Length: 128
Image (tube, rainbow, N blue to C red; front, top):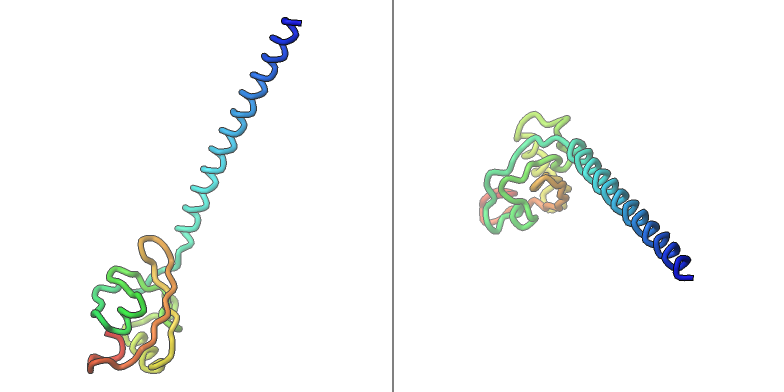
């Protein structure tokens, strides 16, 4: 009876070791897949066409959440495929006064969507 108990306990111990080894393998595989997905997503980031170098406090740009060093990927209808000069942005702003524009930026390696409403403020133009 004692020998049967020892044999059974040995089988339980071996099964537990195998179970933990499989879980450890699965965890390592999941981490590798997550890393591969993150790298793939980083490579799929859209191309920025401008970088924010200043935001005036209280301006529509500031109120929308735009920050210094944000890389602009999309500003209304303007994106890397059709951007030619900052005049493109100015035209979109002029035609959108008082209406919300969709702005997409890359901030700290992540894509961030903002809503920006161009409006005149303190005689400083539409954005600031």
